[in-house]
Image 1: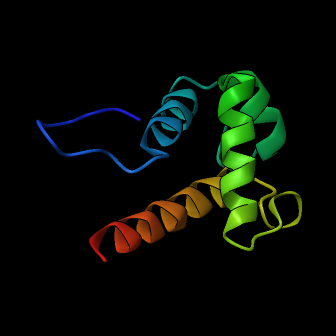
Image 2: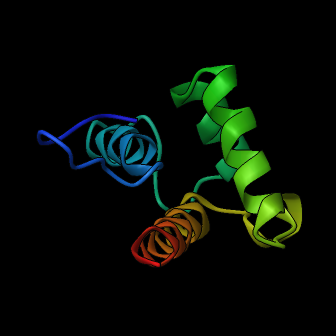
Image 3: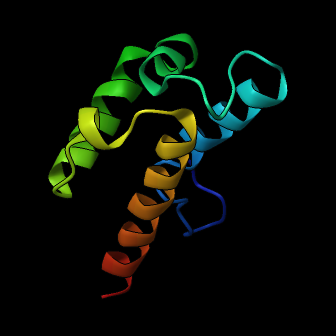
Length: 89
């Protein structure tokens, strides 16, 4: 996680989404590519483990519900929204 302001913290998966968008923009992967393959190319193993744990914690079955990079980006958006809701409580 990265601090963006004095006390403001970005949602947990902002950096992963940035890496995925960059990889799509440079042609390393596409939105329709297999998510697992794209993750292995773009992220380090710790990022992948953290992502998988976060999806499972939220009641998702990461290997079944996330097949493409597009699915993954959608899931990351939902996880970050949940994080923001919990943080505001």
